[in-house]
Length: 133
Image (tube, rainbow, N blue to C red; front, side):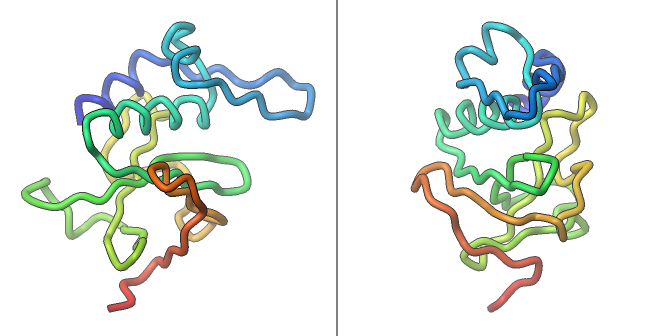
C-alpha cells in the first residue's frame, strides 16, 4: 500500500503529447520527472514492487493501463474486491493514476482488459474474470 500511495500521490498524471503516439518512459525517467501518464505510472509502480519481491502484471485496456498483483492474507475486505485470475491466482488492481488509489479499484472496467503482461516473465499471459479451478 505504501508504494501505491507514493506513486499515486507523488508522480503526477501528465498526458502524452497530442501527436498520436504513445511515449512510454522508463521508470527512472518517470521518477526523476515526477510525472507521467497511466503506463508510465504503472511501469514505475511495477518496477518498485518487483524490486521488493512482489509479483506484478500489467493490464491493458483500449485506453488505460494499470497494475495487477496477487494478494493474500489479512487485507481488509479482500474477498469483496473484483479479481482477475491469472494462472488461477486472484489478482487485484493497483491504479497509480488515481491520486486517491485504493487496492482493488481502477477507473477501467476489468471486462475491457485486452491483454495482461507478466512483468517477471516478460510475456503476455492468459487471464480470466472468474476462477477456473
